[in-house]
Structure formats: structure tokens, C-alpha cells
Image (tube, rainbow, N blue to C red; front, top):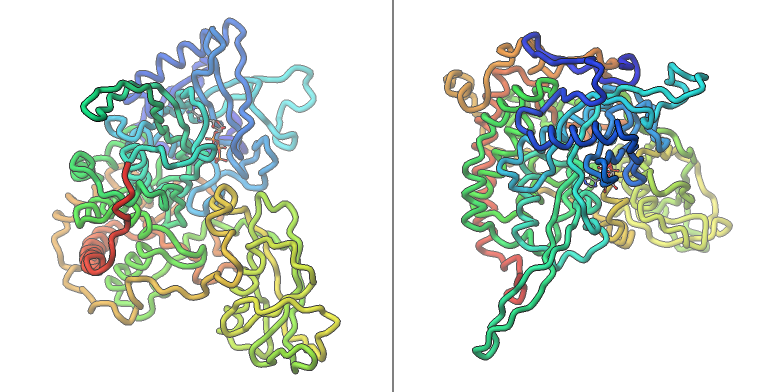
Length: 616
Ligand SMILES: Nc1ncnc2c1ncn2[C@@H]1O[C@H](COP(=O)(O)OP(=O)(O)OP(=O)(O)O)[C@@H](O)[C@H]1O
């Protein structure tokens, strides 16, 4: 196996027995204990390979994926090599540039570590409640796998060599389309709830419509009209969730739940769903993952515990799926979700920090994946001759044409601004962002005037009409991989007119100043009690530093990104010591309960989320 570049150096605890390099084309290295169905599928695939039925490369997705087939030529398994993920060295679709272990598409999920998460999601889907297809982690070799020329050790040899890779291997689910090709109104409430419950539990950061496959089947429906019983053949739609590589991040991330605004998500949970949720045991689940996937990091277990706690408490308090999803989702990428604010508050109450920012730690998985796209000067108008511009209020910036809009988003960074205050600078950053995100290329002029105070575009002006501009600063436009939501759901945020882009939106949870007094007595709480509730000591697994977020593998040096300001830092669970983690969870639970109680009382005084005409 190409360990140096293309194979993640997963840490395996000393007592783990994993058979490697037996010469078999497919070897299961994680998750098989729970998945006998995959054993059968793998057998079929191996037989087909011996008969010369070759796999086919999938065209969809940003990473490398291959359909392996049975002897009849039917696809039965989807294999996704970990070194072909987006940004990994052997990505076949041009999304390269990182080494394994660096932050990937999501900063808190390292490149090369999505495969193990795919398996974790399957293992966590008890009773196949959400219908996650069977998934295992395999070592597999085949010449079809992609090796980029700068990584290829067999470069120059005439015949393609079989490259052994670590990959997730998932049962192929025959389907008709995915949720992006279909209106959502005919999805059943229960199928949406099942997927949503899973997404919340595993803190899925990437539930876009393309990750929900749809299978149509015919069913007989008996409808009684005017006393007559009529049988109808109706189409039922089964939703199958796939692609869970970006779940269980190491730090709180920006989530994306496609179902968040579907009406089904606002329908209250049924008794059956509430019972399923109440029976979830995150401690047991974390232990199960430790046993079956020892390469999954401790911070991922903590994320599971945190988000399962949120799901259980919120469902118990009477919140619906959409309300829970909203708590976990950021309104704007640079803002914090309610869940993040709660975590910050819990941590600052433990540490006694006065400033919430002090208690934040940047996950610092290395340099951010941004690059300089364009650098330009901006101007502050000194007077308003001819254009009725208010020099104290307005500034003007050039309109930019954005190339390659599909895969990149743009973030302005202000380097310096001689005359403006820090507050104005941050407003300017936001203003510029609201300008570039809507991708409005049809503005017929090259400059736009912003209202500095509100950060909203005021009018477009012809540059020749602007008089006496005074140079005050320099802005950098950084390009970074586009967030999925913007790419897959353009109607969701991009369709907002520029002027509607909110600048400051306060969380319902209130400001830092509102928070309750410090809860120091928790420090003396019984450790054994916490141990029972929030997990065994990491030492138990022979990984002394795991709880401190120290990489278990020789990952690249972790550094803060100088481009990241505080608002972009992430709340990391892995950086807490074991004791801090236990105390944190106790405080967090208490704050969560208070916040939920507040939400419920607010909800009681507000109108219902759904109109009474909305039926499924
Ligand atoms: N279990 C499955 N059954 C059938 N088709 C699948 C399955 N898993 C993935 N696919 C298909 O394989 C292709 C690539 O899969 P997937 O979307 O998981 O890859 P990815 O590179 O992780 O994608 P993304 O860009 O969404 O992160 C998609 O077209 C998807 O529909």
C-alpha cells in the first residue's frame, strides 16, 4: 500500500487485530462484525472480478467513486478510496492539493478520513432506521483506481498496476433519481424524519439533496369514497441516505441539512420516533465505534455524544426536527449556531473566562484552504459631488467577475484601512461578501456603492462620476472551496437580493452578558458519575493524548490560519482533557435544558409552524 502519500496512517490501538496484505483483492479492515450482508456482496464482486467483470468509475461527486459489479454486470457495491477524496493526493477530478490529515472540504474533517465516517454512520444506524446502506472499510486493489502522475510510483510502466487502497465499500442501492431531481412534497414525513434524526445524531455537515437517493415502487392504496372502496396503484418513494463522509467532525462545524425547510421537518415526531430517540445511548454507541472502528478519533465520539444529547433533550422538550436542525445551523457562514453559542457558554462557565472568545480554541487543523483570487484597492469618497453620495456613509468597491463559480466561494479580507475603525473594517468585509456571493454579473457598471453603516449596496455608479476618491485601504478576495449549500441549493441563499443579506443577526440565546453565573461547584462533582455518563477514560484505549485533540497520526503540523479571524474559529471538543470534557457536558446539559425551556415558552406564545391546511 502506498502509505506515504495515498494511505491514511490510521492509528490502531495495540490490541487491535487487523489482517493486512493477505493478497486478497478485497479485505475488510473495519466494520464487518456488524455487516454480514457486505461479506456476501464482496464475495460476489471478487467472483465477478475473476470472471473479468470490471468496475466502472462513477461520474458524480467530487471524489473518486467506483461501481463494482456482480457476474451479471449489475452494480452491487460503491467503493470510494480514501486517497481520492476531494483535495486528497489522488483525487481524479482535479480537486487536489492537500496531504492526508490536513483539513478537507470541511475543516474539522481531515483529508483521508471520510471513509471511516461512512462506516460509522452505517454502524450507528440501529435497526437500519434511516436506511443507510451496508458499509465497511476495505483494503482493495485494482488498476482502475486513480493515481495522479506526481504520486504514481509505477509511472512509466507499460501496463496499469493494481493499486491497493483503503476505501469505504457500500452496498449499491438501485434507485431512480436523487432528491435534487424531485419535488419534495411527496416524500413521506417518516422518511424525512428518519434521515433528519440520523443527521442530527451524527452531526452530518453535508446532507445536500444529491445525498438522498430515491427509489420508486408501486403500492396498492385502498380509498373509500361515498361508501365505495376503490383500489389505486400509487407510487411510493423510498429515501435512501448516502455519503456520510462529512459527519462526526472533530469540532463544531457549519452543518447543512437539506430537509431543514421541507414542511415534513416541521411536523411533530410520532410516538414511535420519540421512543427510538429516547432509547438512543450515545455512550454505548461511542463504545461500539471504539470497538469496531478503532481508527476513529476520540473527538468524533464526543461529537456523537454531544449531538445525541441535543437530539434527545430537544425531542423530549417537544421540539420538531426543523427546530432542532435550526439550532445546529449557522444563519451565515461566519456566524455561530445556537448550539455553538451554548457550547461556548458552557466552556466559559467552566473556565471562568470573561470573554467568550478566550474560551474558544481554533481547531487549527493547518492552513485554511483559501487562496488569493484578487487584490484590489477600495476607495472612500471624500465628497458627494455629482452623485449625491454621503462621504461619511458610503464607500465604493469594484464589481468583480467570478470565474469558476461552481466550486469556489469568495471571502474578502481587509488588510488595513487607515481611516476606518475596526468595526467599520469588519462591516466592510461583510459588505464585500454580500456583493460577491450573489454572483450578480449583470450589474451594468464597474463600481458599487455601499452604505458603510448598514453594509448594504446602495447604488451602482459609473466610476467616471466619482470625484475625489481617496485611497484608504486594500482588500483581498480569497477563494475557498464552495460550501455545498450554495452549490447544490442555489435557490436557498443566493436568490436573496443583496440588500436583504442580514448583517448582524443575534442568536435567540442572548448575548454573553446575559449568561447565568459561573457554575464552579461542578468542578467537585463526582468523577465516577460523569465517567458513567460521558464515556470511559481515553487511557483505557491506550491513547493517552486522544482526549486532548493531539493527532493520533503523524499529521502535518497544526497551525492557526492567519486569515481566520475569531469568528471563523471552531469549537473543538477534542482539546478538552477528559475531566474537562465530563464537566463540560454537565454544564452544557444544564444550559441546554434552560435554552430549550425558553424556546418552548416562546413557541407557546407564537403561531404554529405549519398551517392547518398542510397535510401529508
Ligand atoms: N450506495 C449507493 N448506491 C447507489 N449509488 C451510489 C451510492 N453511493 C453513492 N452513489 C453514487 O455514486 C456517486 C458518487 O457518490 P458520492 O456522492 O457519495 O460521492 P462524493 O464524491 O462523496 O460526492 P459529494 O461530491 O456529494 O461529496 C453519486 O453519483 C452517487 O449517486
